[in-house]
Amino acid sequence: MSLVTPFKALRPAAGRAAEIIAPPYDVLSSSEAIERAAGKPWSFLHISKPEIDLPAGTDIYSPAVYAKAAENMQKMLDAGVITRDDKACYYVYRIIMGSHVQTGIVAAASVIEYDNGRIKRHEFTRPDKEDDRVRQIEALNAQTGPVFLAYPDAPAIDAVLTATIAGTPDADATADDGIRHTLWVVRDDATITQLNKSFDALPALYIADGHHRSAAASRVAASRRSANPHHTGDEPYNYFLSVIFPAHALKIMDYNRVVCDLNGLSKDELLAKIAAAYSVTPSTAPVRPAAHGEVGMYLAGQWYQLKVKPELIPADPVERLDVSLLTAHILTPILGIADLRRDKRIDFVGGIRGLPELEKRVNSGEMAVAFAMCATTMNDLMSVADAGQVMPPKSTWFEPKLADGMASHAID
Image (cartoon, rainbow, N blue to C red; front, side):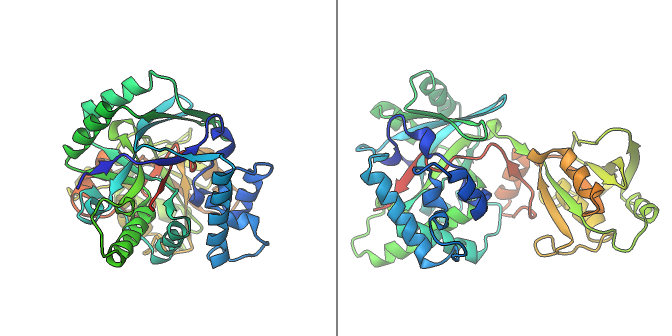
């Protein structure tokens, strides 16, 4: 089975992308989605967050929500706002956020290769979140939230991207947040064949974001496979919607930590305990770590630069991560936080909010200490996935986010 395949995308009709595209379903609350969709009858939020069209207080996991999503999608199809290509194509997708540009391929990725581990994951998933995505896919008979994948060095694929974006785009829109999303349809048979061969030659693809979406697609495929006596392996349900970027082009931001108390310690006691594993240097300016082993700490109105002692950095790809070192030497033994997933004393702040957000959380008294992390690298992520291990919670924050609505994958 091919690693990826072209498909007949459901996508905005000509000139309609700006009315449709929306942030991913899981980055907005229901109230935020209502605000973002106000006055936008064709916003994809009516499909990805359909509770916004139901009475306030509706359980977001109720059958009525999934039914509303299907109803709203059908309305957009009937109105011609969304159309379906009559030929299986690949799609080149470029995102521009400020000075950062990343360009990738929209494709249908193989569920079998995901199940077999060639499409590699690095996170655990939660059954309740998988269940939600399964219900959404089944209600729509389509996958609408793309899985964010990365491919290792592949100059032949890079060359196709470069050549394609020299042409006229089929969709071009700037979202509310100022991020520009542009799509080119790859219809040429020779180019499609070239991409098929280039992807099939890759040893692996890596999930950057979208573990619940890919796991849900696998569950739907297994269900449909068992229910189909004429299953061949070529059915659309055997593939899941993905956008695949070159790993070297991706931007991972820091994912920072804030803790609400010092576990009964005074400021000086905390500093003394930290000094057993890190050098501690006060700073007159905010500390944004620039290298592996460094952490910025904001405590009682003062920034500190922390540098882990080199002999404490292990070879294991998970244990050597900066977020793992912080947990092993500060969060757990000193601050008493053993379970990052469940402990209410810790919170996480995406790097896109900047260091001022860390200062704000501490200065307000809401939190007692903040830790600014060095961003995890794609090489770190791929090393963990290659080892068959999982990243610690809240290790990566990818920006920019993919837009929902630019392309969807019907599985009928």
